[in-house]
Image 1 (cartoon, rainbow, N blue to C red):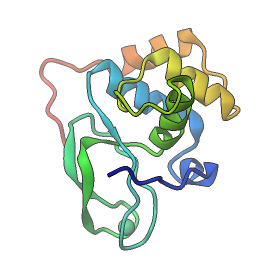
Image 2: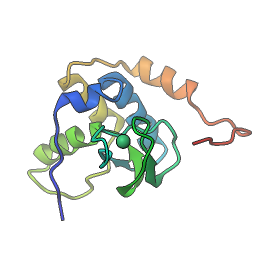
Image 3: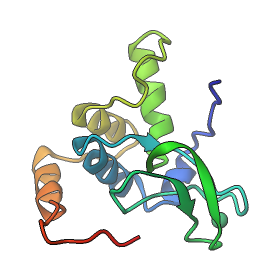
Length: 138
Ligand SMILES: [Zn+2]
C-alpha cells in the first residue's frame, strides 16, 4: 500500500533544513542505505537520523518515545520530495522508489532553494567517512 506523506517544506525545516537533510540523504545512499520518511506518532515531529545504521525502530529526539518506521532505513523527510521528483520523471511508476542518486538528491535540494556544490558533497563525505576503529553509538 502506498501512503502519500505530507510534503510541506516545514517538515524539512523541523529537521535542520534542506542542506542538512540533503547531505544526510547523500551520506545514506552512498552507503547503500534506504531512506524512510516518518513522523513520530506521539508528538508528530518528523524524524531525521544522524546515525548511518539502518533501523526500523526510531527514537524521537523531541518527545523521547520509540516508534516503528515503515521499513528498515534512515529517517529523512527529504524522501517524500525525492519520491515525487522521481515519480514525475518515471511517469508515476513506483519502481525503485528508494533508489536515488547523488545527482537526484542535489536536484531536489536545488528545487527546494538550496544549492549544494559537488565540492560541498565531497567535503561532507570525507568528513563523515567511516573510521575503521569507530563504533556506532545511537
Ligand atoms: Zn516524538
